[in-house]
Image (cartoon, rainbow, N blue to C red; front, side, top):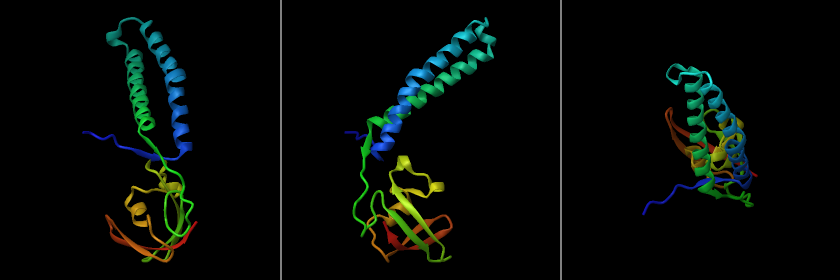
Length: 157
């Protein structure tokens, strides 16, 4: 039997998605319907670029609504780990790149909250998987397009 994919996220992220869904289904859907109505008033629909654009926008809106509904319906709420001796969800992990010696701190989050620029790394990413379950001082390696990268965990908060 087919099993739906689960999307790991915090309670806060789930709430954000629910709010966005309500906005899209109410305010935004009415705006797009109004655009279509106005475009129809311009006459012949076969050569009406405003109508075509409004219908395209409606299609994008419905696709976005379907995507968010899927995320909400298949959300798996994960709570931050209260253990600080091992890397888990919600951990802030300081690591050292063994090749360059540079140090960075990352937060381990679910895939729906990942934002590498903000140093929020998904537990499903190769880097996140490499850190999960490790302890202070442990080294780990990950496969990357540039080759094997090695890191050492310096601190877990």
